[in-house]
Amino acid sequence: MKDINLFQLGYGLETGAQEEDTTRGLAPANQSVLPRDVFDEDRDDHFIRRDGSVFAGTHLIIEVVDGEGLDDEARIQQAFRDCVETCGATLLHIHTHKFSPQGVSGVAVLAESHISVHTWPEIGYGAFDVFMCGDAEPWKAVDVLGRAFSTADVRVKELKRGEGVVAEAGIAA
Image 1 (cartoon, rainbow, N blue to C red):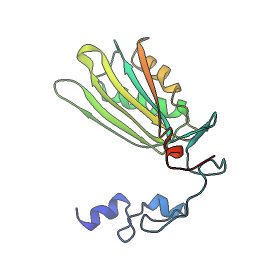
Image 2 (cartoon, rainbow, N blue to C red):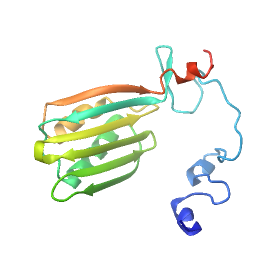
Image 3 (cartoon, helix red, strand yellow):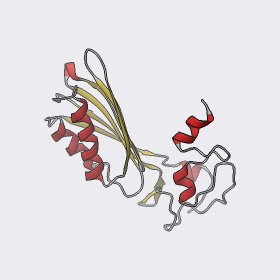
Image 4 (cartoon, rainbow, N blue to C red):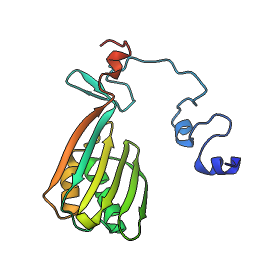
């Protein structure tokens, strides 16, 4: 990739930092940052601290079954936007791709992480991932997706990403 392409993507050629990182005062990757106590409630790292546990974020594996409109890119993009708004997240970018003869894959990149999808409209199935950290409320996406694709059959599995990693790294509360 040419340097100009990296510049257009927002990467600092000398530091490897994203423009948004440097404008918020974050150190580039090649500069050391002193670690802080991850249990500190004042940390601005978007980790979730709940019931004595610290984890990176909530990752929902959401299956839309018997859904309608799963071949419609515009409908999927609107569902992403509705999820972002309802969950209190921050949308950075949406990219979708329509396959031939059917199916859509896509991702909404969020400040809090992402929402992604792969669909099989011929059987009414959509496989969504909703991963959010910080104050966003990913569980609110479940009802949004059910409404967006006209189905009551929405199945969910939850993962607390990074759960136990902090304790395993030897950092005590």
